[in-house]
Length: 311
Image 1 (cartoon, rainbow, N blue to C red):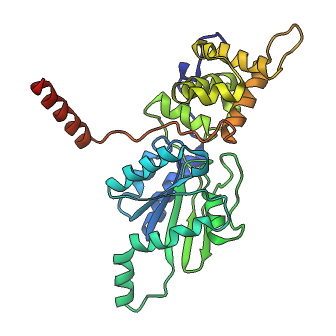
Image 2: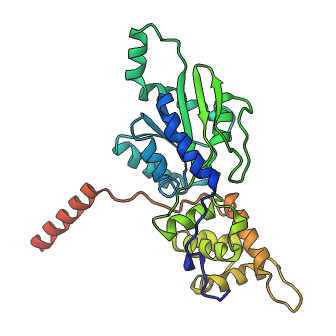
Image 3: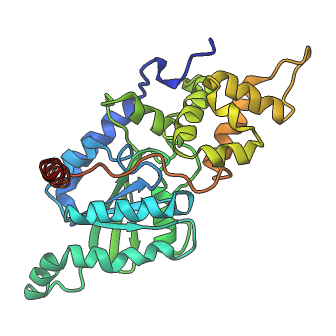
């Protein structure tokens, strides 16, 4: 691996056969649910928004959950909430690992389904359970969310992708939740999306080059949160000018990760970096900001034109 190698040097692809089966299962089961609850990662809401899931579930009332909000930059999360809500989409931010916190989505789900609930009442079906399909990419916290919603361990959960392999129906106080396996899509639109998914662990680490992954993460974070990076690893400001691989070496040296001959064990340093980022030891960081809507861009352009004319 050369000093200039980063995660963006090649395309990442990971689409096991069971994900094809999951998409087919969603297409089959979508008619059997009342609404869709899609779990996103608050650090990368756009990259964790699966276009295949959006396509399959487009005809159902939808609620988005920005999960792991305790790991994300709170100001950026507020911007994402406003972004989704301005598009008319229901959206909540939460840390579903906190016991009972996910139960806060019950009333929003009912609000999303108010028309359906009215029809049910008119037919004498007011007591029927609300059927909710819970979907998302791997390792985004779907099963943890369901367990918090239920108040007990009802779904398999682990901090790695691919734990849930088949649909699970879970009944919780007036709700029937269908926990679907995490699923990616066949081709990512950008290397940035692929990189973000790899950073949070939605793509299995054992198919990636861990040093490339760490270099890509360093390149991304230092462009957004340079001071947090310097403070975490006690680096001088000049370190921000280093190529990513040399920056990885500098961090490894600071942590004493040396092998015989005084060289830095960059693989060990890379694993440490990725682990600390995922554990939020760098602080609450968000890797994506909401895109500017077309109307807002046009208003900005118009304002700029006016200023130019006045000048």
